[in-house]
Amino acid sequence: GIFVHAERDTDAGQHEWLFWAPDLDASIVQVQAEQVSPTAVGAFDVSRFAGNADLLRDSAGHEWLLLADEIGRVQLEVTSGTLADGPALLHFDVTGFRTFSAKLKTLARLEALHRIGRFPRALFPFETSAAKWTRALQAYDGMCAGASHREIGVALFGQQRVRDDWNARSDYLHSQVRRLLAFARRMVDGGYKSLLQ
Image (cartoon, rainbow, N blue to C red):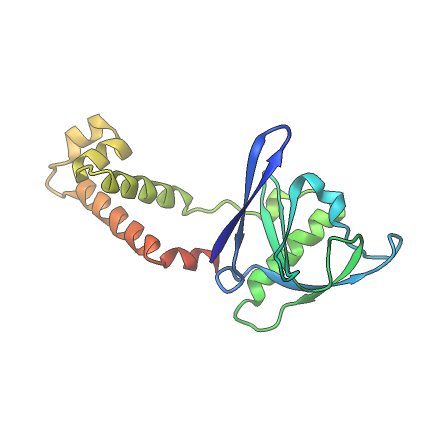
């Protein structure tokens, strides 16, 4: 469902780009690329985004394009034509209501990047659940390393808070660690796919 393309960056050393399979990430838009002249209105030229783009091509000539910067990312799957040979008109496939909303967000982000040369922060709102995801992954890493629930609690909430509240009447802190671990297990067992919808 995910593959990594590593490339050499002369300034920053090794750089890895993560590509998702379209059946896992509903935001990936399929496009057909029609070669046009550089002066064609509405043409897309991947070379404009050289520092923020990775065009991956498999042995059968199938292409995926990842555009990313410090604000966000979008991924396209090229189902016909190529983006490797210069400017192209992109014909977008947004078929089906199940993925319609996610694909529209991708198109809005791509349009903004094409128009102003960067992703606007407003099109990538802060994910309010990110702190929970981070804590759950930390708890899971601790569990895999053999840490006890209490040791995980110390790592997440600090020694003083665990000392004061671990054995409190409500047991809320221990329960919070258990809930984070249960959530992490669900995510590791395939639940992470729901985050991509």
